Image 1 (cartoon, rainbow, N blue to C red):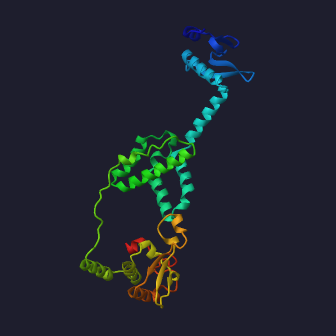
Image 2 (cartoon, rainbow, N blue to C red):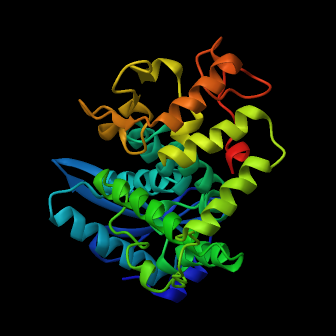
Image 3 (cartoon, rainbow, N blue to C red):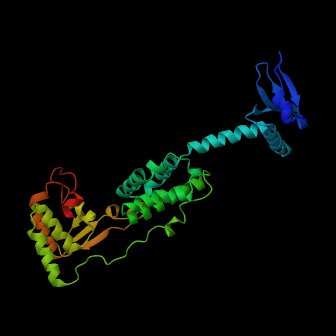
Length: 326
């Protein structure tokens, strides 16, 4: 068996030569003075040699440990050289599977179930708050403290609810990675319990008739183009979502001159996932009062030459902006 002294004092010769240790481990001494660890073994009836590195970077003890590890692999019927190559390739592939790469795969796979606006909000939030910090890191190496650091930065700017939503989205990425065999666990799973709690307060609301009248009068007297004021009036009369109002089309209104005037908001324009939008008989029906009909009659001369009740002032084929109603 070799000793540290024998390995250290081995001198080069005109030709390469070997210094053997136990169990077919040997040190190959090259004419240039290099000392390389090698191990001979037999697999499937064939003699093979496996490299363990160069001395002194790999010491005698290190070389013996590598030999023992390779021998254990060989004892299980696996070629240790092939196992080493596969491990290296697996490590390289793991380094390529960054959080951003997996997150974008998850997004592309899931976005069909969301409305376009919601999908755009999801990927934009990741691009803004997550990718700059951990996007380049291998997803399998992310730990709860690293993910929590991302969420703490969001909390620090006062966006408590945003931090909670992004934690859910990060967790969804990890669940996708687990299903794909890329990661073993979800480090974001339990972080919701350590995030700052939302301050639950009463939502501002007018519940008395007199201040309600005051608010409506203020909206009527506000300096705005007539189409915007009519939109506010129809919003108050129908209580639909602002997004449903802004996208209202003339062909959605039925029986305006009859006994049962109706606004049929298509399911495809309603809030919800793709399943909700494709629901049969899922249209939202809004019975129209005489006051609603008065709004429509006032609006007809202004916008009936297009498809939209409330088009943008600059682009008539687009609905008015969110800010116009806000």
